[in-house]
Length: 362
Ligand SMILES: *Cc1c(COP(=O)(O)O)cnc(C)c1O
Image 1 (tube, rainbow, N blue to C red):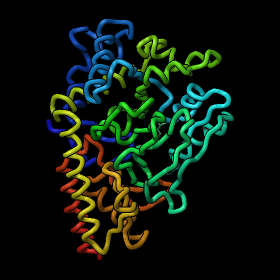
Image 2: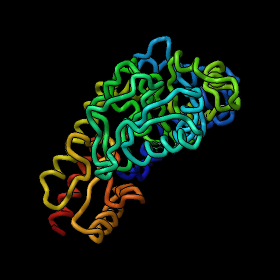
Image 3: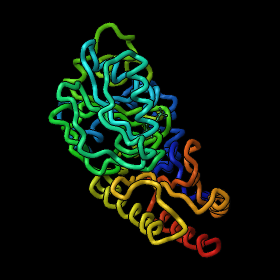
Image 4: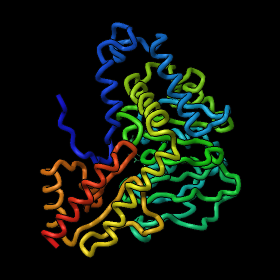
């Protein structure tokens, strides 16, 4: 029997590819002839070993990572990485540069400050309510890393091209655009992404760390907070988030085998975002909130002429099977999150709905 599925524009946890959910459902009671669910097998078993090794291998293939990179599956969300990064990478007397492009970047900076780590905000877009990505930033050549947020989920901005750092390794929070497009990973010392936006369910944070960054981990940290602990045990020092890792593995397989890799995924994402932004730009009714050259291909943020109309828009959208269009509670307005798993057909349906709503209310 066909299930009722809505057009899912949630910001996170967010849509997952339907074939992935169907595969989970089909193998849920008997994973790989084990006679057990994936949620029942030991993380020390061959069954789980194959899952996590395949997830690592696919991540490396998709991003063309060389042997210096370790792929880890950690808990504590992207938010724990805000603290683990300065704890592991910054020694006394060393400093890091941060670019403040919104709520999540601010939280990352806050953790460096709480830990008493030397850091500098090299650039910020706070002056214009985080509506743009700063350009031509002068970074400290002695910085241990430059921290950026590749996509700003709440304000709907995204780095179109990553900044020139003069050789200082980039550290990036890619929670909301990880694997949405190809990029040159060799400039990055560390990449992290809470899975629940673009690659899986909540409960896992994928971390990619380069060997030279890994070697910075000091001895005097709690075991669970050291990258070296997790890297030396293939993310199985303790029980990993098994179901989350398994779901990520299936999403990566879908990306490689069904979509056909990151170039193809990026082209689809570009098409979806262009359709929405064209609709917004052609209208006197909808108004985009991010500056045009900084617009996110993942989170399309927009306003209507009044808060009352925004409320009505979201109510009617919900009745018509469009979910998740309310802006983040801190900023209001509307937001369509169009991650990898939200298909072009859903975006086309949303655009039709937006045009009809404007006709009636504009
Ligand atoms: C959602 C989000 C976070 C927070 O992730 P958690 O896994 O909930 O800690 C951090 N950064 C960005 C860019 C996000 O979109």
